Length: 362
Image 1 (cartoon, rainbow, N blue to C red):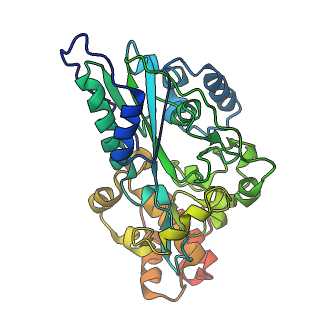
Image 2: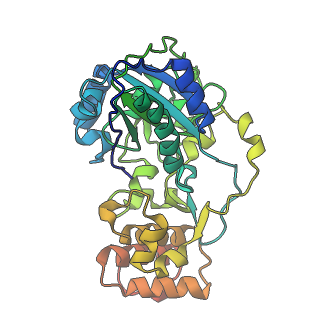
């Protein structure tokens, strides 16, 4: 979910030198960041060209975010006039290896289970606060369509672009959220670029359940489950089985990546926020769903899309004879919303419960 850019006020300490990069990094790490780097605020020209290429090819599937206005999202000067430096921070996302969710339970991607971006922003605000105290202007940008955060992270030497399109941090993988502090302070940039560590590995390309990684590092959003569960409209029929038990996000390309596999061993095998009962989503009121999941990107801010996803989860995983499942399907088969009605029909047929409906899949 996009968040408003936070603008830090400029204080009147004219002539105060900006803090040393080593101090800023120490502050960031102490505040909870796991990696931090510095780069210049020059426009990301190569990234702009690549975004335009992918958009022209239709690979964005009408996704907005940095595709909405790539000329803006690749130019830090649009965030802060006079921007000279970007401090990029990465914060670890807890992602324990979990067993199958079980019948009728809907799996939530690791990054969306907790308010990781809220924690990330808080840490970046501490770094920005030190710059403010030195009479610099600083703006925190995280989960925001005004900056290409992965390109900034790579240029700041935090990691490399993996074949799954994510930034991979050596020895730790891609289980991180990224954000930045854009500032008018002239800070020495980290010059060391992290070498590509993927080599000949194809684990993510071969492991994507819909074949969405069409080139190394290039994702066709028209096939990517992480986008399809967020996109408006119907879930395409050809991808509903591949959705499995997912209600939001998809971690498969990260799960199969060998980079960072070892450092997840201490995370255990439980996370109470990893799953939700699909029938609970279908029964909940709009306000309750938004209160619980409102930090997610939900198309048009309309909870009906969460219900759409929950119906696909039922069709793929539920016990066809569970009274709660039967009731949820029956209610949605009689819904006034044609999208929900059509997904309920599909789910009923997948569960061999044609007795619940009359008509065909829509």
